[in-house]
Length: 463
Ligand SMILES: Cc1cc2nc3c(=O)[nH]c(=O)nc-3n(C[C@H](O)[C@H](O)[C@H](O)COP(=O)(O)O)c2cc1C
Image (cartoon, rainbow, N blue to C red; front, side, top):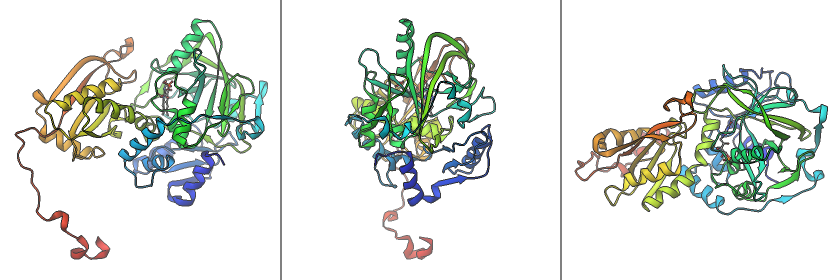
């Protein structure tokens, strides 16, 4: 049986039941569902939550699948106690071992068990959520837009949020830097209608695979197959010439016409601030296909469910770039405290003075959204903000050990960019060498600590 959202959920329910909550009472799709997740987050709890009964829809909602690192590690075949460096190594290995997809018939495709086309298309029957107080409407936040590069015919997958506008129209926000933006621009330049599909609800390995930071023109179906460890099963859409994952939960078959735009947003974005209203393309939904009993998968943008998914999938490229600057780089991490986007921690076995700054420059070149790169010695745990900040506090002389680049390109959503209202996404970037320097004094240590067996002193119950 193909790996899908249902069997991953069944795996969690069997082996990690404490990680899956069902909410059976009716919840309002406007703020109530997300308020529950936000409240759990305040208590430092990150379970998968399934809302069985969302007002106005017969379809349940699953959210927060990606808010916990362990679940993502297990999705790519790692043990539950794997660390982030294990994840980066395994994801990198799978990313560079693509697997060709296979095409199956409509009869073999669960996602085409039910087909709504023409007048039957009704986005109000789907349990789209409203997430944050000032969001302009109800959004799809974990729909992967599947588009073909016109030159190569290869498939690109990317998440571009969709705001419901009518029963069969939505607004779409595709960032300028996304490959999908280049594809849409080509169609618009040639005054052609862009046919594409939005696929919702997958095994988390597919969600991670679609976000691989692969170069343009690379076929994302092959990469996602590599990350999943088996070929993706694809099926032809009913109304557009596009292939989609046959084992998804729901697919929207869509088109964008070249000269049609409408207001979209504000929307609560990943930095934790609202993105402004924009004039964005209009998406027409021609058909909706789904399983007989689908689950609608959502992602909580601006929260760990979104941040981890985005940050982890960038780490393999960042590690490769850092190792171009120095082969002794041992670890990288995009910490949640930096929204998994703005800050990168790099650990290295420094053999040559100056290397940490070169490493920081390479990391900046690898990811234009980064604003702070901290380079630490290899014994500092890059998963620990506490340990990295300790290194900064005790090993950095700001005038010697940092460098700044002003007016460099950053994230289009960086709230600290210069004049964002004019469309300038320029930021100041800072590299910080927080490694020990040659004159660093001896550090305190208690002899024998590693040999102590605590149970010998405190008893078993307190060990
Ligand atoms: C939950 C989530 C929501 C996202 N929303 C958007 C979005 O609305 N617009 C966008 O351009 N990118 C968004 N992204 C980031 C892109 O999906 C991501 O950069 C992707 O790699 C782009 O693919 P592409 O460059 O192949 O087109 C989102 C990512 C996640 C994880």
